[in-house]
Amino acid sequence: MHQLYSIIGEVEKTHSRLGNAIAFAIICVKARMCLLLVAPAGCGKSVITNNVAASYPSYPGAEL
View (tube, rainbow, N blue to C red):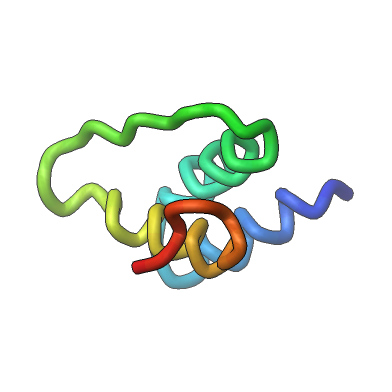
């Protein structure tokens, strides 16, 4: 099983329906691609960016 599946499962335990979005954000960071998160308030944009920044603290611009 790919490591992303375990990340999706862990995130789904605390933040329902955000697992796939966080996995996609991690793929974008690893590929050094840009991801623009556009969604209404309360959809979890901050949760996604905070988790990605915590996973990649050495990535430029990850300081929160």
